[in-house]
Length: 207
Image (cartoon, rainbow, N blue to C red):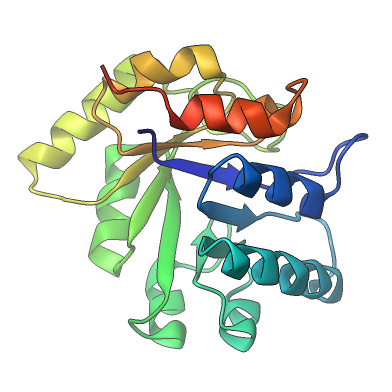
């Protein structure tokens, strides 16, 4: 079974809430609310709705970037991009009971997040993606293999979640690099039936 994280994205067809609901209906149990360029009040209103939905499905609910909002709403955790609050600062504000994820593009990024107390790594991009601005260098399969290998050598045991322009066809090869899971957004929302697409992705086998 594939460990899948769904990253919310607003499209012409679906709201943030719609996307989260369909991913949950398809069996995903990890939702990250990502609403770049929105006000904290807008994010809070959407977070309250999606958090309630996640609790109905016993799913993990992560908010992108907004550490104070995570603490206020008692979300499960926060995901921090390269330009967001440093992981160490977020850990000091949130304490040990919240999940903290960090975005990484290199082994040095991974090590820095590990040393700062991150719980998992969102590692990418796998390839070019239109859902993210200011993209870091594309990793591809070899990039994941190299990072996973160096993590083993350094005895760094953190879940690595591949992200960035991934399609369902890419998943078997990506999982063979040694990553722990996959984060998706557009490939699910562009599917004819996002619920079925989510279900299909989760039931892929690593081999």
